[in-house]
Amino acid sequence: MTDEEQHMAHLQRRVSILSREKLVISNQYVDTLTRLSRLRRLLDRWQAVATQMYNHNQSMMSKLTTYKDRAQHWRVLCRTNAALSDVRERTLCVYKKRLQEVNLCSICLTTPIDCLLSPCHHGKFCCECILQLMVQEDPRCPLCRTAIQESQKYFI
Ligand SMILES: [Zn+2]
Ligand SMILES: [Zn+2]
Image (cartoon, rainbow, N blue to C red; front, side, top):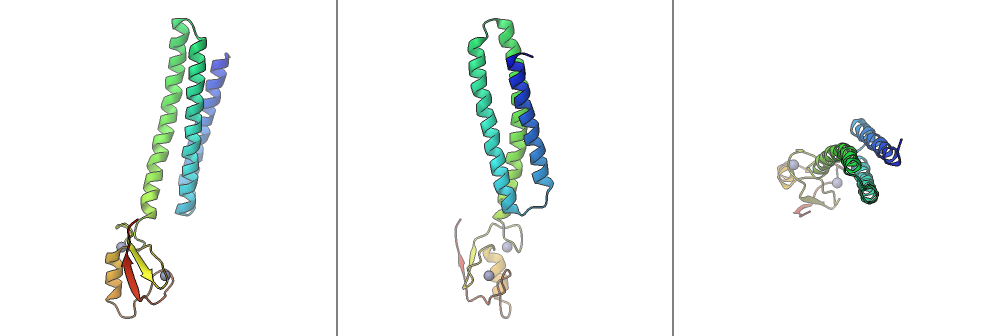
């Protein structure tokens, strides 16, 4: 194996580790915020591999002199790059989806959160849901059951 092949094999191993890890994170039951920060870290690591690959490519290209060698190098590079992009795209997709879930009202799960309750200061609801709650007798915070005195719209 040449140096380049070894290096590419190493990068490909890292890509497959990242893919496996992404699968584990998606399947595991962990709360959304934990999952989000783990996905964020995974994306950062993807970035690290991509940077490493870019640097490797720069140094390889300066060493390769013949057209044949350069073409061969590009083929390996494109394959690895495609695998990397795939992992990143899919991870980003899951990340964005989870991010949206975090910002959705915990009552209706469809509207973005924009309502802060007083005096308990819980704010994971939308104003529409809280308005519906406020017309009921003895309205209480769905999270802590504190009697609601006031609700306020807020902007994220
Ligand atoms: Zn709602
Ligand atoms: Zn509360």
